Length: 368
Image 1 (cartoon, one colour):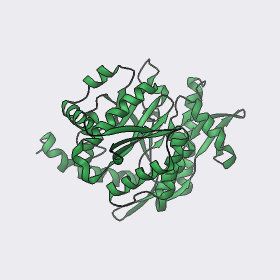
Image 2: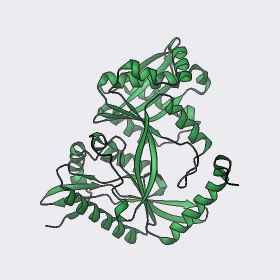
Image 3: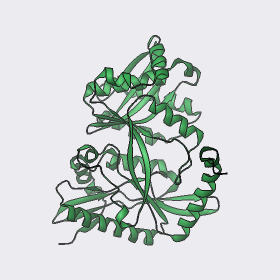
Image 4: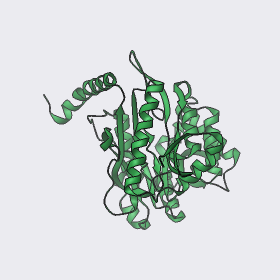
């Protein structure tokens, strides 16, 4: 029997999330709470959520996020499959599928994407395997990009992951010397506390939100999106790690928790207290807390070292990546693919990339 395509509906939401919990391909990025969060953040850029399920013999075979957004680049206007310009999670498949069935499911997934692209005038899409999906750490041969065989282009991103199965001494030895100094100095002045399910209060979350807004200089997220994050913590899928002087908070890290992994979602600090080393201490205390909690892997985020053919990072991006590497861990492949549903959009994108790459790379690669 052929796989049936079932668009996501309100009555299917519990089944979708139950599948996420069971599939080793899935992480929190697949959960409907997170998809709805990214839909909220998209705001005026959102076109529609066309996420769907593949079903065979009344059982779910795969869940497939497919959010469409409208973007602009110069005078160009286009539509893409994306999360706020970031890649969508690749489909999560049922664990028990044979290799042949997995291939069949992926082929149908690609076919549906192409149909949706025609229907909604989508020119581009980017897709990514979650860095903390359990299937990536089961051992055996290293995973490759499953979409390349279907005409997608591989984008060799990397992300920094700390293996928390090591003891505290090994983890501490892996921290950069300058970071250790900042951590030790901050520990003399600051108190760190973790607010999680069972301890988070509405008042504490409001303090975090106020500092987040103050650090950014304005409210960069809708109130609804903050409320969504608060719900994640209360549901056990998040935590706030707070550094304070007395009763005054000076820095926070928002950490996402799911299965046996944790992800550094965002951070903020008091603009007048940046010399305290609070962000360094918060990250180290986060690592210690996650290890005690039994979390196996902590993903700090994408790594940038300099210009690449597919992306020319800003100096700020490179600085942030270097800061994250200072807490140890390893840069691991972040399997990412892109697809062009429009030849014109491909030409325009590659020309834009080349124009950005050559000046940036000239000093690095001595291309003159």
